[in-house]
Amino acid sequence: MKALEQTYVVRYPKQSLATFGVTSINYFIVTSPVYADSDTGDREGVVRRGKVIAERPTIVTPYYALKVQGFSDEAYEYLQFLADRLGANSPGILYQYRNESDNLEIIGGEPAEIAHKISDDLDSRSENLAVVMVGVDELWDVALLKFMYEFTASSSAMNVDEMMSRGLLDPNPTVGGLPTAAVQRIESMFREVGRGRSPEELKHELDQWGAFEYYEERFLNIFRNPRP
Image 1: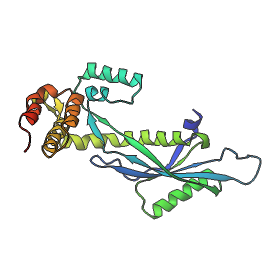
Image 2 (image 1 turned 90 degrees about the horizontal axis):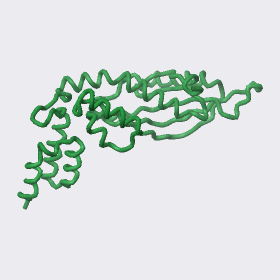
Image 3 (image 1 turned 120 degrees about the vertical axis):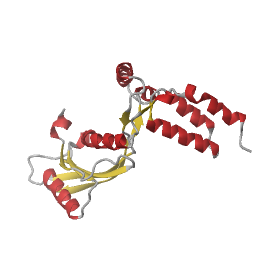
Image 4 (image 1 turned 135 degrees about the horizontal axis):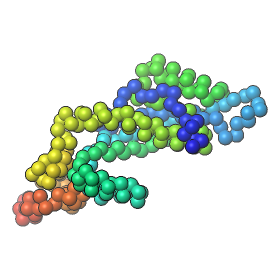
């Protein structure tokens, strides 16, 4: 709660998350050092720099997500609830991030003042994919998580609209109502297997979607008619 209450964004990125590509966002998180003494007149700020890499948003279904490792028990319970209520193949979007920390620097001045100076500098250089935050030193990564959540929420409507405009969320009745995006991915993997990709990866993908029954004959033909 301390981190959330004292964390705020001074400058948001000027662009949203890309729908069909990877987004790299430079971040600057400014905090008061844990050793700061409020009785002294000298103030310092800790500036942490790095990048948040947002992978291309992926279309998934509750069934698919239930097969993905790494979620909490509560998350799996929620996914099962969605599958029961909306259908196992109802489409959704999965966002995945990774943090690449760069360096840490001590700068004289109030953290808020430092953050605004960094923001002004970024504006002067038209750095559209950069964020500046003020946070709590020992919980600085909470500031990063808070930003990622808010940035995702602000971008998701646009991402969904762009995917819908291409028909990627439309159900395909010939394969049990899988989203069109899933069908396109499976078709791409079949082509790649024809060029030498491991059939095991294709089988895994089909199982993830619960779609093997729709592609079984075609999959087995890979082994009946091997490439010369």
